[in-house]
Length: 516
Image (cartoon, rainbow, N blue to C red; front, side, top):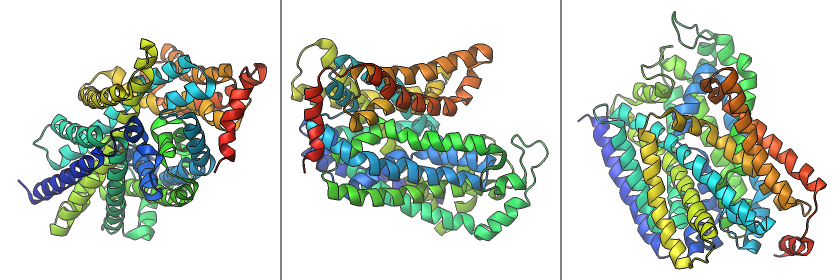
């Protein structure tokens, strides 16, 4: 066993014990359904802010997006991190946090499907939303397993990737099932601190590498870069140093919009606003969360933009997804300090992934246990039964995500690529307009969900028939952005053509904004 492996295992054991301890401590506060799903709406600013940020960024951002876009686009990829911080975080908190907290409290809604049911008086909409969450968020979590498993395999080449994915699944299940949202929120705080420390350390080490030479050296060396013969992704120095992404400007814009505006409609992100305790906490949380997202997002893409220099233009054998693992092994593989930092970075990426996994799994489990099953059975389910069922389904969904991640089924992989944009595209219109306008009708909300679904589904069908399914998957960012735009437009247009039948009930709901 190498020193790097030994230090990493020690760090993993300490980390695992800390997460399990938090889960056990949180168990007593998660014995009610409200406590398990939204922390009794009593979560503070720091915890909520870090929960939002750590759910936003997983190992997929570092291993997949930052590596790929940094390698292909260069310095311009940092705009994705800036967009995520300003549009995906700051603007989301400013526009939706307080309204979401007040309205969901008024409606006693604990999940996104339950919000739709009570806001629009429609059990059918609740079922539809729960099905969409189940179908597309569980495969999305499988992508997180894959990204993290491949990274650990780079440090432990003799251990199969599935072994690491199984360890991650078990660790996530322990504290999630034990403590629910409260456990995940407090572990997110710890994980967020690890992420910030890890990213700052990695930025310092990467910029200090002899092939980079600091920020000034990064720009100069990238401008002089020339692709080697046979490069699978040939590029030029002008492309890599173009602040607006050069020939990738259009691609960059769509990715900024998808990964930033997409958070506005994702249930695992929005639920953070359900749980925050008051307006004062929201004000503090807005600042904290934005700074966190700026550091992590911009830091990840900055690190990715150095990859061609550090790896001397040689794409690793594992392809695009192996870029960041190869960079880590290059800059942190030697010396005691480097090995210790490597262990810290591994825990950083583990933290980023587990925070996303726990949020997605909790969202999926509650969608079925709280929203889908009681509605389909048409019988009132006792809160104690829903609690037990939610805990069981958390285990089931962790297992499903693990199984999906170990498969090489192309359908599952494709669901991963579509999931972010499709889920947000379905929910963003009904969710946002439902917060701001009394004139939004049930038919208008239904139209928003269905139009988002059909936009992605229709575009996928057309592209697949005219080209192939791989081409459709490659266009998933554009489809996601289009679905979000269509949903935001269709909801008010259809609502204007229909009539709100229960104006008195809607007026009573909107009185929540006048309450302190």
